[in-house]
Length: 138
Image 1 (tube, rainbow, N blue to C red):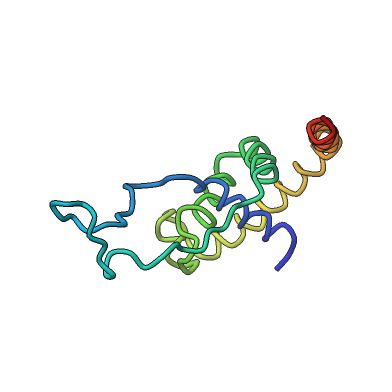
Image 2 (image 1 turned 135 degrees about the vertical axis):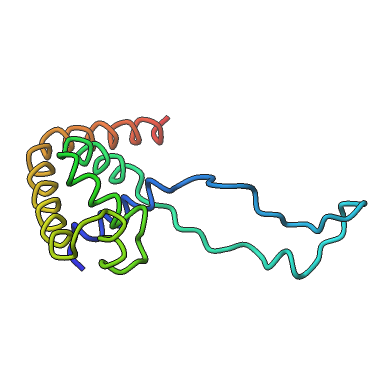
């Protein structure tokens, strides 16, 4: 996988990060509320915490892209990340060939946008590092 592909996967985790949906039950619905069934609670699931700064950086750059590029990237990486391209293309009501070409164009535009914003993001990273150093030195 390329670096951009890894960053887009991290972006999809960033977009979906947090509490989504109803709370998962850890106890059986008994009158006492203290009975824990083995069927309901299997233990803590492994958690993946995305790189939040990089996710926010990519989100800001993706917001600047044209509508078609945003729709294609969101469908491929956020809405239907585990589906085949054929299914994603059907959901977007376009052909698979057009989806592939739009994905290539969207990734190219995103790369250009990231290159254009690189100096600003470097300044943000320096200020973040400086802020962390100040907090740890106190």
